[in-house]
Amino acid sequence: MRFFLFVLLGIFFLASCAKKEIKVLTFAVGGAPNEIDVWEKFVDEFEHNSGIKVNILRQPTDTDQRRQGLVIPLKARKSDPDIFLMDVAWIAQFAASGWLKPLDDYVKEDGIDARIFFSNVVNLADKYKGNLIALPVYVDGGLLYYRKD
Image (tube, helix red, strand yellow):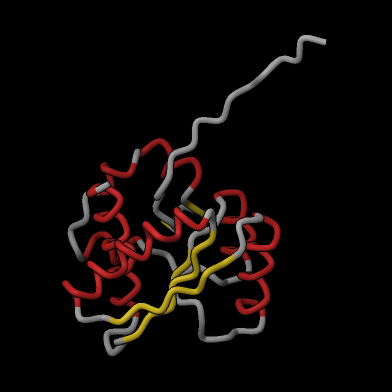
C-alpha cells in the first residue's frame, strides 16, 4: 500500500510542478466505492504532507462512462480535472488530442527513478511518440480462458 501512496504522491507532485502556483488540484478517480475510499486516504496524506488541497471527483465504476466523463471536460478545455486515472487503452487518443502533458522533464528534474514503475510496462503502454505520458498505478494480469463447451 505504501508503494501506491508513493506513486500517487509522485503523480500529484509532477502535476503540481506544471503550475507552481497551484494550491488546489482536482483528481478524477473511478472504480468501486472501496477503491475510491483508499484513494481518499492517500489524498489526505498527500494534502497533509504537501499543503496542496486536492478535490476528488468521483467517477462511475463503468469504464465507458468514466471515459466519457473525462472526454467531455477535456474536449471542452475545462480547467478540471487536473489529474486523473485512465485506462491504458486511452493514452494514444488522449495524447493525440493534446490532453496529456509529457512527464519526461518532471521525472528527470525531480530525480524520480522511473525503474520502480515496471520499465517494460512504461515503454510499451505509457509513452506516446517517445514521450512519457503516464505512470502506471495498477498492473493488471489479464488471463485467457478457454470455454469447455
